[in-house]
Image (cartoon, rainbow, N blue to C red; front, side, top):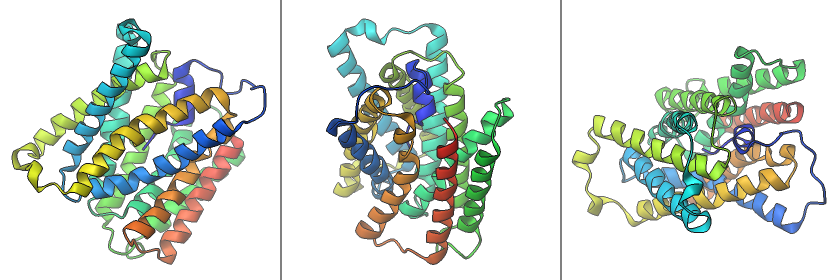
Length: 314
């Protein structure tokens, strides 16, 4: 799971509707390709990691390592003062980090123990739909076309969670993914309303630190560290964790934050309905995950609903 465009825009202090000048160069399309493929591949990597590694402990390791690397990079490039934030900004970043990375990503890693990576990505793709509903609860106006997109997407979720239609995936795992999308959406909405650090990279450092700490606490509560044997973890799981740290949490997000300042927001937002398609394809290729007609139909409906929302929302 990854930072939504509206949240990162608000965090960066930029106007989502501000026009951009100049044409789209090769660098923009290269960065967009990184966001498409790398973020779409994180579901596959998570599935590989949790095969032999405790799920919440893996999340703590991932975000702890990513926070340290990103923080060290910022300090080396801009000086340690770049990491200074006010108490209000720190509190907001920690809260958003707990929602996004412990509530959102944590539920995903727990669910992917029993749910295929491609199906998980399709379920989480509903996140922009929940953002619209939560913003409406906070008083934002929502157009009819946007609400129609939300309704379409919810129909797709019903198809994906219908008993017996999604193969071996248990209902509990699917409900965890719905919860992940809702909590992630809540964190995204609050990120646009709370006093966040102006630099999105600095905000990410504190969010990931909060995510690592929160995941570690829950991991101990579940008793994961007590039975953890690093020697029993497969090379594939270790490799998947390194991939999530370096590419999923640093390279892709860096590309994403750069895109928010260089490309039209509607174009950047297309990652929301491209990522699940990439995830389904990779899961089918590398993990031989089944592509049943309910998964393809429900997934297509969800992605279609997100497309309608993205087209009508700015």
